[in-house]
Every structure is written in structure tokens, then in C-alpha cells.
Image 1: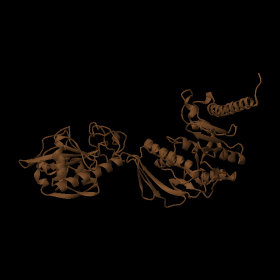
Image 2: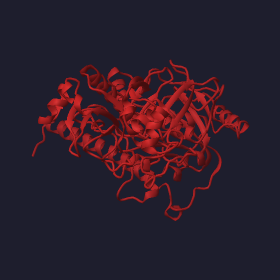
Image 3: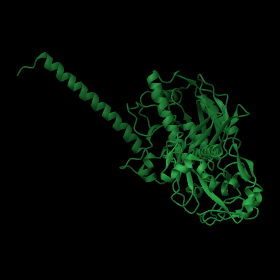
Image 4: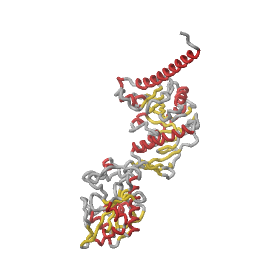
Length: 502
């Protein structure tokens, strides 16, 4: 059978495509096998012995466009035996064409179901005493750069735990101080008084630190890398020194197209959001005074579930009320109080809310709702309270007014999705005492003389002025006991005690 010229060309094209697919597949398999076979089975559970020197770790890069092979080659050109580890969450695609050398490793951090745990542990691949975290696109100009960083680190040993060499770029490296409060779910950045010594950096840099220090962090290679690193190190009281040593950037900008830049920015935002969720950071104060929120809102549920035994779940985590929840409670309280005042409903700060005003001029940092007392006879003055008898109402601002199912009182929720709320407790006078029809099993839920409400007095609370019982100290001590303002305690000490030493 004769084969025409066209048939021959077609067959050759198919053969070439098959060969290309074969070699790409072989390349990926070789990379994967190198990653899997690096640690010998006999040393799976043994610590990797450390020798003098520095391992370069490249962690942050984009699969769709990067210069990782160039960076690796640049380090090897200056020092062929230089240990290099490229760490990725999953096998990069398109594949990274890395040098086939025993001192260059690609480590996949996501565990595979058919592999032992140590295969995805980056610390099992580092055999040097020090590591250098290197961003993508760095240009290596001299063998002395890492050596000088190591010399500077040793010279500052005991005073700093990290040293940094700036990567020259359009935005200079900035020295910041970072204060992280896990109890308050907050990270606060500020400009450091020194331009050389600080607890966090903003910008691109090569960071050198001890291997054992890096891998003793809870998530040593979480992304975004420097954000993650400095949150963890600031909690340990570590500092970083910026050196006179610097690296140049081989590519400015790093990404060649606006589309790739857009993709990278979106991925960075997603990584940052996930990092703050994982670390339990819900409020970030930036060095320029701006705030970023990563917690609940009107469109999401609140940050905690149903409260049992007056002890919300976050107290068991040694944390206080998330700042987004406190902000929503402040907003709801101010809104409700404004409605009550314009409607002619007499109200006062009640219970733990009054205690917070007396002690903090704010909501108690671990409280999860706001309580207001109101005069029962004034309820008809407010359309919203009068009309909820026939069902809940979502007002024009999205707040939900309803009759509480637990008893004869009212509740205003932050939104239909977010059930942070203000409770309104109707009281009425009887024989000189203020009483009500629904009592809860709380120590402070007792009758009290009406003279505490005549007159009501203004008191700073949550950023505005609210009305409170006169002689509020006596009022609070009647409800909670002597010295309650000066001696804070969690709402149910039998379940969880406040650690007053922190």
C-alpha cells in the first residue's frame, strides 16, 4: 500500500507530539521521584544532622510565570555545591526545569496518600545549620553575599534571630514593628524607630536564620511567607536586622503581563486571607493607620456558635471576643439606643454591659451581647417594639427586631445572617422596686430599687454616651457583689477562670 506525502507528514507530526508528551511526562516523573527518594527509609524518624553552611529555600513563586530555574542556576554558578530547596504546595505545572544535581531538591509540601509523612516534611531535606529564604527573581552577583550574611548573623548572635538583605526593587525595604495579640485576634504594624532593627519587614528581602529556629515554628513555610514568618517570630520576641548586603532583581517587574499580575495579586489576597483565618487574626492595623478586617460582617454568621453555660467557645481557646464581633455589638448598641431615645423609651445600661461601661467605658472584652433595661410602659412609644408582637421585623438598616423565644423580652440582631445582638429587658415598678416577668438564672438578675433610675445619668460607653443608673457602683455591687468593678472575672468561673496574670 502506497503512503502519500500528506499521510507521511501527518504520521510524523503525530510521532513528534507523542515524543513531546513522553518527555514531559518523564520530566515530571523524574522530579517527583527525586522529591520522594531524597530521604532514605532508614532515616525517616531520625533528625537530619546539620553541617556548617546555608541552604537556599525558594518558596514563593507563581506556577504560571516564574524565574526559579534561573535563580537556582545563579546560585550554582557562584557555588556549584550550594544546597538549594524549592518548596511548593503541589507539583508545579508547567514543570520546573531544575538542574539534575543531588544538592537541588524539589519538595512537595502537600502530603500524598501513598507516601510516608516524612516525604512532605521540608526539614528532612535541609542538612545545613542555616537557611536563606530567597524570593523569586533574585540575581546573585557574588559568592560573598550569603557568606557576608552569615558573618553578620554570627556577629549579632544573641541579639537578633534573623538578618535580612534587601532585594533592590521599586519599593525600598521598610523596617516595621509588629505586635500580635492572639487573645485579641489582632496584628498591629507600626513604623519602627530604627531603620535597621525591627520585628517585621515590608518589601522583598533574603532572610537568613538558623534551620532549627525556622522549623521549630508551627507553620514554617506558610504563605505569604514573610507575613507568616513575622507573625510567628514576633510572638516569640524575635528581631531581624537589615544588613548593608543587598541583592539585585533580575526582572522588574517580576511578571510580564498585567493579566499575570492580576492573577498573582488575587492569589496573594487569597493566601493572606487563609493565613489570617488559620492564625485566628481578624483585625490588622497597618503602619499607615488603616485597618483590615478578616472576621464576621452583616453578610456572614458571627464568629462563634451557641454559648453554653455563659462561656463562649473562644474563652476555652484563651481568647477574648473577636474584634469584629465587638465592633458589631457597638454598632448595634448605638443604633438601638438612638431608636429608643428618639422614640421616647426610657432605657439604661444593664448587667454586664453596665459593668463594662464602669470598668472599660466599653463592652467587656470577653462579653458576647449587650443588655439594656427599658420601662415596660414605654414600649408602645416605639413602633418597632410594638409591632414585633406579630413577628420579627427587618428594619431599613438590616437590623432584626424580634420577641425573644426564651422569655418576655426583646432582641435586636445585627442582621439576618449575623446574630450578635442587644437584649432589651422590660422592667416595671412595684412597691418601690423594679421587677420584670422573665428571670434568667444569672446572679445579677435581681430586683432593685427604682431610685437608681431617678435620675438616669450619662456614662461613656463604646465610643458614645449612654444612660446608666445613678450611683452605678452601688447598683453593680447590689447585683454582682462588692468590688466587682475592680475584680474582673469570666461570667461562669466554675467553667473557666480568668487568668489575671496575663
